Image (cartoon, rainbow over all chains, first blue to last red; front, side):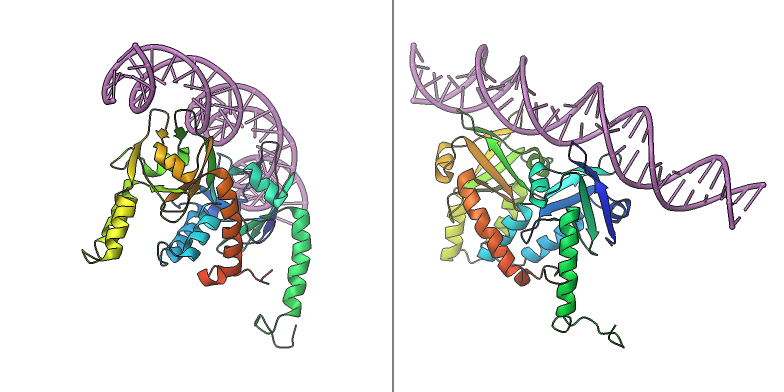
Length: 152
Length: 152
DNA sequence: TTGTTTCCCATCAAGTCCCATGTTATCCCA
DNA sequence: TGGGATAACATGGGACTTGATGGGAAACAA
């Protein structure tokens, strides 16, 4: 599972170390690296191992071959995703357009989300985190978050 | 899996480099090249390895021999598809009618869609990409993509 | 011959690999 | 428990390989 949040440096070549914990998650898989795509939801990147993409593919292949929704998902996800292989030191090179989409220059924040992860510009992530926490607090009933005795 | 989007040049002879990642997908197959046909759905080309065509064949053979839809698909896909062999540098030569159908002149956009890919004129693809992203964003629950905590 | 297609070679850029170094975390032993 | 040794991790730069592309020669068809 992808867990915890890590900030790593992005060097002049666009290389960034993938946190060792994240590398351990995909180790032994069919592809020694991660698969990353720009979120169509905001200025950040989403990623996971090849297993994640294969799960998406299985979902999509249950749709009819020429279903409009299927083709839209295929273009939005597979068309945007890129496999990023680890180098000998566990780094990947971020394509320029990915770095631009997420506003990454000197630093990148890796956020583990269980089956997948996100990559943010550290400044944007701080804003987003505050917003997400406030949203969750204000909507916890609507979201049916598990309530704890005492309401804490 | 065919992944990511790449823009490659089309030279005066109608030659275009197939992205190295795509070549790697079909490498080792029975035919050292790709199979391409004009989409009956829009101004672009569809393609894949020989394995893809064999899967389509299996699907179609489940239909009744004289089903109108079957005959239409057979003509639209198998009748229109051509195998394009790689040259020593991994390029293929686009037949003129294919280039016309997709409006390809100086550049061609290869879009990976998992089990197959599409070839677009870069300008036309930009338009459709925005549509696909908006559609995917609005309908991602239909795909049961893992929801992000907070829904933000 | 004339135009078209296929094959081969040269070049340039970009991506990948390799080695070296500093820093942090972990382990072991006194 | 404290300190030192060791291993793991993150980072920087240089060398090299691969990929994309352009042009030309040879083979083929009209």
